[in-house]
Length: 158
Image 1 (cartoon, rainbow, N blue to C red):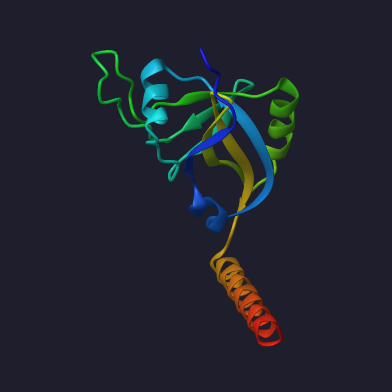
Image 2 (cartoon, rainbow, N blue to C red):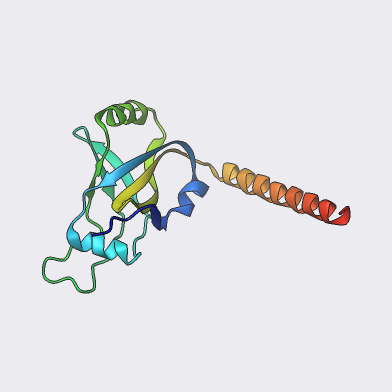
C-alpha cells in the first residue's frame, strides 16, 4: 500500500485571522473515528465556530463541524462532538501557563492531512477590537496599493 506524502488542506479559518491577533501557532493531531476520517477525505469540514480548551491536562476541540459520512451506517459520528487533540506534554504545560493570561484563547486555524494523518493548526490568540480590525484592513489596503504602484512603475521603465 502506498503511503500518502505531503500536505492536503481540508479547511481554513480565515475569519480567525481577521478577528484575532495570533501570538503562537501549534500543530496537533486529532483523535477521530473512521467515518470522520472518511468525511474529511472528501474535503468536508468547517472550523468557523471552533475553539479549544484545556481540561484535566488534555486539550479538547469544540464546535468543529465534520458532517456525517454519506455511506456511514448506524455507527456514524455526531457532527459537532468534542474531539481530543494530541500534543506533547511540554506543549500542553506551556499552553496552560499562557492560557491563564486573560484574553487568550485557542482557535483552530487550519485542518489538513499531513503524511496521511489528520492535523489541526491551533493558534494562541488575543481578540481584536473593532478599531484594530479597521486598522488591519487599512494597512492591507495601503500595502496592496503600494505594490500596485511599484509594479506599474516597473512596467513603465522596462
